[in-house]
Image 1 (tube, rainbow, N blue to C red):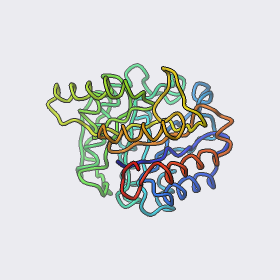
Image 2 (cartoon, helix red, strand yellow):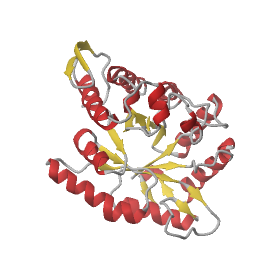
Image 3 (tube, one colour):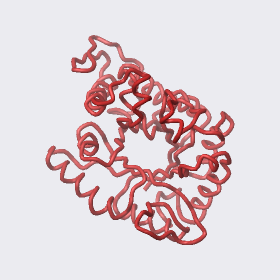
Image 4 (cartoon, one colour):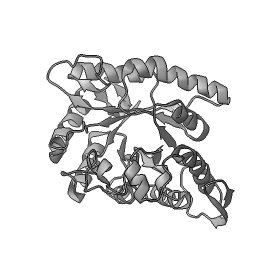
Length: 305
C-alpha cells in the first residue's frame, strides 16, 4: 500500500517556500505521492473553510514536478465543472509530461455554490457535466486528433499533442461517498477516492456498494484510494464521530493496518483538521508525517510496520 500526503496549498501559512518544503520533506521521508486541492474563486463560502491565499493546483504541480524527482504528484481533487475539458486535458497532459509520468488526476463535482456562480459554471447539473467532461478528457488524452459531441461540450478535429506519458492515460481517482460518485468511479475512473471516512462505513457500506455497482455496470471493481484525516493525539479518541486517522499513534497504526488489509492501493494523509490557526505553523503537520514515517509505516516496502 502506497501512502501519500495532502499538501496544504492554501491558508495563512502557505508560500512558495512552504510548498517546496512540503514536497521535498515528503519525498525525503519516502512518501509515495503528494496531492493538492482545488479552488479558483475564493468566494465567501470557500474562504470560510479554505481561505486565501490559495495556489491553483495544476500550475503548482507543474512547478513541483521540477523540484522533485520520483514522488508522484496529483490532485485531491480537481473540481471538474470549473474548467473546459480541453483546458483540463491539456494542462494535465503537460503536468504528466513535465513530471515524466508521475501524475494522478483526482476529481470531484464541487460543492461551493457561490464559486460556481462567479465562474459561470452550472451547479445543479454539475454531476452530469463532470461525467461528460471526464469522457472528453479521456478522449483528448488518448487520441492524436480528437472530436467529441456532447450536451455540454463539443469540438472537432482538435490536435492534442503532447499527450500524457502514461498509457493509456494518467489514473483518474473519483472522490465522493454517494452512489452517483461510486457509479462515476466505475464508469470513468480507475480508483475510488472517498475523503475523511469512518472505518465501519467504509468497510461495511462503502466497499460493498462499490462492488455492487461494479457488477451492475459489468466492470471491474476500481482500486481503493481513500484520503484520511491525520490528527495524532496524546490519548485515544473515543466516540461515534471518530474518523480514520484520528487518535493516538496506536489507533492510527491500527487504522492504517486495516486499510492495508482491506486492499487499499493508496492512502492519502490529510493533516488539515479545519483549524485555520493550526495551519499557520506547518511544523505541526510535518512532525506528524515524520512520526508516521519513522514509527508506523515501512514506506520503502509499501507496507505498515
